[in-house]
Image (cartoon, rainbow, N blue to C red; front, side):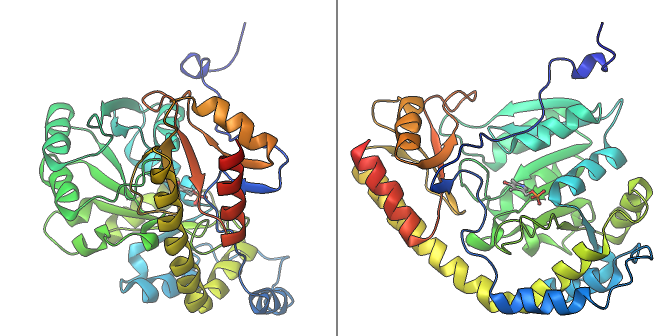
Length: 351
Ligand SMILES: *Cc1c(COP(=O)(O)O)cnc(C)c1O
């Protein structure tokens, strides 16, 4: 007899296949690290830390620096161990028994996963046939289900579509729930829900950001959200004491001094994304136009899994989405360095 909560019995932990290969294009990280000057800054700063003491519980210096960069107040920034922890804490505060979360599938699996682990009722609504989302569909779903928490993902993982402001506006105006816009990839896109901050109803808007992608710090585990001061105060209630280590706080703070490097990485990735997109389209594949650092595609014979295996045989790992509901036969490739992308495109040619 399992002692596990019955509502968790059929679940699995979240993971991605880890195969040992030369070219890893499966988890949407930055292919380039921060410059070595950053590591020098960091090692210098580490020597001044008092690790015998608990860290600053409110991470004020880090939050103030993030707030300055985003043009908001420090009281509007909440930081945690990756944006995944922010999502979990949002659900602890606003979800749970008797509460409802709405997701539009297919989207980032963690939103639905954490709704389940926090015992929040999960409502999954289908996107359009072409996997896009529009205001009519969002308004209808919000009106029908009156969710406590609505997850939107822009650009959406795994389709790459960025949402126009009117879709976020529709989510806000059709109900009274929290509207969480996961903007993990926003710097690759040409629209952001941050334009909605300060507009009527936007006190229920939460923008999720991460250091794991454009900031090239997936190994640090740092994410944050921008929201109204009331939401940040609510999140403090469910936050574990001293959840953000002194190491994480200083690693994030120092990274903010390398904004120019980030912008250069983004320009490179966006150019490479367009190159890969054209190349995939010219093979006759179905390609979803992406505003992120990854591309969803389906080979013309629809045999994504077989192609994934042949790519692994050529030492290239992409994400195999071919067995995910609604994504039959699809693969998702992360944009890498130009050399990695050449290897991917050559492997595709040979495979
Ligand atoms: C990668 C990703 C994240 C990042 O999560 P972290 O916990 O910050 O590493 C968040 N949201 C989406 C949609 C992602 O794809």
